[in-house]
Picture 1: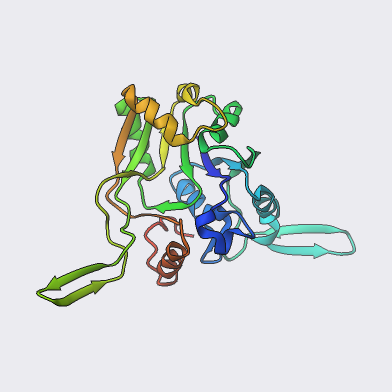
Picture 2: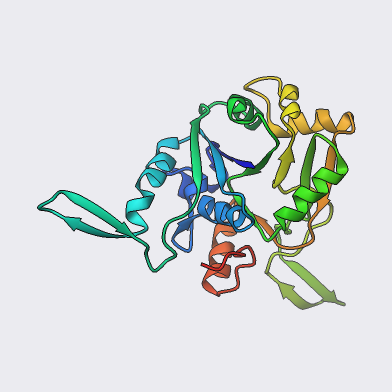
Length: 258
């Protein structure tokens, strides 16, 4: 099954990083967050990717074009003019197929998906290029098949944006700065779409959310509730938080072993 990853936005709320590269290429643990997302899918056996490019899309193209050379050990015979690649200590070659599709800079997320319709003749997965999770993707797919609707999204509780105070009288008893689970549910990405849902995307200016609202009114959107870890990388604070989890050796989204 193909996995569509939306990676074309300008990421203005993370402008400290995105002034020179697209947000999906901002690194966590010396690897782009896009790589982390793809590793999560590949861990569950989904390794056919279609990446929707826009803002600074050439950065992503160069990364994957050079990946085989930069992520493996090389033996170069200068006399013969040959280059031999070998598996590296970091896990070797990845068994991925990656379609990199230019979908324009001034295009909504729904418009980007519509522009990739020629690659999406069958059921596909869809997510954003800035969020990581420990979601069970096989369980998500099974849920979607049972529900029988055009789209299934993953419902998550977003981390609160502010620290939490516990007050006793006029005294602060606890000041918790770590992100807390917020109230309510939001669409955390990690969706499954039937190709028929593409018919409800109205044009380039359309966002995925617009299409989901239309489909929801028709009773065609299911919610797969995920109570585990989920975090998007909207701001520098989010980036620092994810980096800290990675460096601590306690990154919940790292479900793969290599």
